[in-house]
Length: 210
Image (spheres, rainbow, N blue to C red):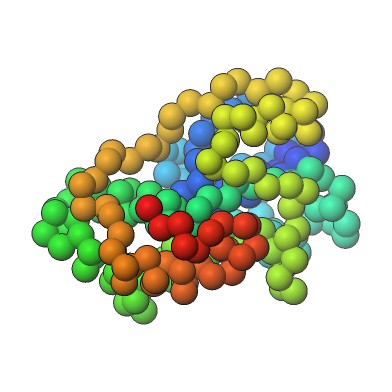
């Protein structure tokens, strides 16, 4: 997550939606008094102990809002990127098991276990997207949402909203294609069930499995 008090914006980094590419583009706008939390390529933490203690950069609206001044969130331009749950899960699979042989030995079994095994299904990278951007009543609390499928074009919209030019997106943290990262009918249904709220809230077609 990024909280830019100098520019008046908030970026919620929903996992596996191009967050590191956005961070790279947004960082030149930040000043020393702005906050960023991330841990994958470099470690940056918010100067608030309970938030730093999360140990990752995928903080949600509900995590952060209690530590801001009353009404401060709503006075900032807030945004996040959302992605088709099917594509997002396959991106997770390519990332999570890169460098190992799990996706060669048993790709479907490995991916299905991520959504069914209690020890795995609540991993931060697998949390539904709406949990990052919604309040306790299920209302989206960002000023707007960018779509991963058209993210390069969405940067024009973001630049206008922030009132600042943004550099073109770079490819950051892109996992290599994995032959086993494909869906069968059972896995597609597991994704539909796990991310039903994401499909409905963000307008993705649950029948459009790749």
